[in-house]
Amino acid sequence: MKILIVKLSSLGDVVHAMPAVQDMLASVPGARVDWVVERSFAALVRRCQGVHRVIECDIRRWRKSPLSAQTRSEWRAFRQALREQAYDAVIDVQGLTKSALVARTARLAAAGKRFALANQTEGSSYEAPTRWVADVAIHIEPHVHAVERSRELCARALGYVVPPAVTFGLQAQAPQQAAQQATAQATQGRPCVAFVHGTSRDDKLWPEALWVQLGQRLIGEGFSIGLPHGSDGELARSERIASALGQGGPQGESEGARVWPRMDLGALTDRLAACAGVIGVDSGLSHIAVALDLPHVQIYNFDTAWRTGPPASHAKQRSVFAQPAPSLDAVWQVWTQVRAVR
Image 1 (tube, rainbow, N blue to C red):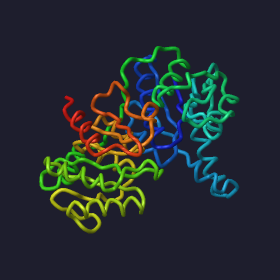
Image 2: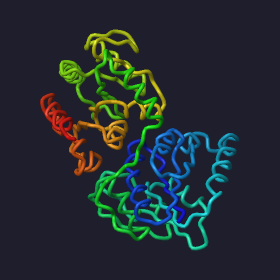
Image 3: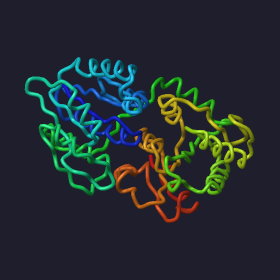
Image 4: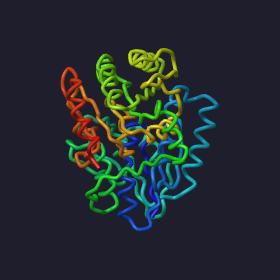
């Protein structure tokens, strides 16, 4: 059975759709799953076990100049690639106009059908064209975790029961290279804990002073600190945290802290996989840490962990919530608990 998943963006949403792929492969005999995704997230999807083909698009960029010659040319090439295969099922798990357009463009097999969400769920974006395009629109319980929304939609579209275990199937590439990275990033032989301090919303940030205090505790416990960044603002914060932990200047190192070089999403995923654990705010990189099954604490200033936080069945990854922000002691207590899980 040839299945096309349409989940274009964003980073966290792409990660949250991965368990649905693992469910389909385990539950549908002979399933072959292709995935349409924005180019910037394609390297991540290629690391999702069982995905047969990744079809890249650039809709975010195309929307900025929809009538340009370059956009028209790239859209034609994308459409041709998308329609190379006829699908028995096209499942729009995103629920937006842009994903509906992609689902409509995909080519169906003779008895193939398009499936989509029939309704908005709490805290998610939703646009009506997704159900207008679908042959079958499926109503999902509104109060649902982001992972379970995609799992339930796919299960009902293809007629199987959602498996009890949540498996992401995200795998780092080149394990030997990852091991070498682990050695390189473990300053003076110390295992590395990555601090995911950056997020797209300032109101999700954790106070910088608490990151420094947490780093001091971890260094005292024999760890080193890795500081990834994806923007100039995040780089500046990484440098300030590293400097407060005893190191000054970009990409330098001290006894316990190192600012990572900026890297693409695939390389960053591989480097996170080599860490001893991750502590981070509600962001895409934190969701990657969950998918990699690393010891992980996810910090929430808002009571939304029920929707996007680590699945309740995952003892090695847990969320911590308080307002205006969780305390250092609360984060440390949960970190101690996830580190103890074997």
